[in-house]
Length: 451
Ligand SMILES: Nc1ncnc2c1ncn2[C@@H]1O[C@H](COP(=O)(O)OP(=O)(O)OP(=O)(O)O)[C@@H](O)[C@H]1O
Image (cartoon, rainbow, N blue to C red; front, side, top):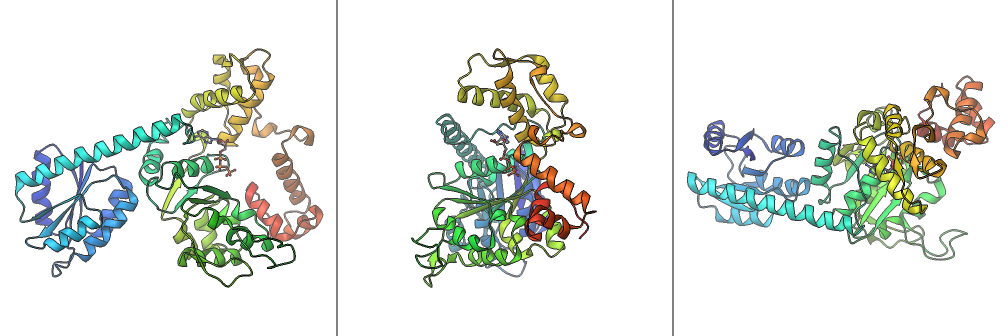
């Protein structure tokens, strides 16, 4: 049983540590509200025992009280027991209202404290079990997207996802292209309290100047020439649900400012209207770019990043979680066989070996496409190594007709940049794009120019 003990008085902490350790708990200690949050973010506790007062000369309990909603946001199933000063019943009542499960008064009675902690651990576990069952049932009903993530590298990521999912916290998903950021966003929504509301994905980084506001905030009839009807924006479509903003690092600064305003106020006005509307959408966002570096370079607003990444979840590339390859391949085999009505689809062990040996620069998406192609090419339903066409990155084809549209685009852009010696303006002119549009695509493909 893992317990987090939080108090700013070392002697109290030590007494509590000895007490709970003797009873089979494994304690972690925190001496400040910040340490409590950091511990809960990084750890996996069965119960928290939280003192409400953090500076010796105050007894208001404010600091501890303000921690409770934050803890609930981080993990709604984590039981928190508060300690209050003797006789301060109001503090205890307020703490319970803010999400504490129980309280004990100082000086505490050892036997009662331990009994309270033990029963909270039991209750917390039951609650988590129930949540898991609900989720498994929802997955069986097809309401939660299947997420294959059994590898060791994904274990801490999954723990974080399970913990953060039910809360309303804004989450920034990072990771290379095709690592599953959108599936995870969908999963987070499906296990949240908003699951019965809508999940609205929008490619925030791909919206042109003129469409951004209307797409996100909506417009009223007559707001501009083409506005023949009122249109509801994605923020309102996601009301009581989740808005998923993809490719956020590609948003120009002007759009970032508009988004930030809505996130700060929780209010928006559709284009052409002066009426203010309240919005209630949980915002999940994603990027394959190092946003910290973008902030540093002045291309991304720090205050916006701060709003978006209450919690950051990084999805490792597939090459760092090879253990997942067989299960993912099996998952894609079943789902595509169903889609193409292919019976008896299966892998020969040589096929799995070939998959395990591939570096997958395109991550899970590349694996999915490889399995889909192999399924369509294998003469019987049995897929062998030779049916799987995997390209070594160094042997990437340079025949356009063998490429996907995305590969062809990246290839043409890289070629144009090579021809112009990395000059972005010249390359943009050659490709018939604006400089900023080319810049966005270069970021998308991880290409660099020389100015
Ligand atoms: N863990 C997973 N379990 C099952 N399917 C997955 C998993 N990860 C990714 N996929 C599948 O792989 C494909 C790519 O995933 P997704 O679109 O979520 O990646 P992404 O990181 O959002 O990509 P991009 O950065 O290009 O937008 C999807 O079809 C998705 O269903």
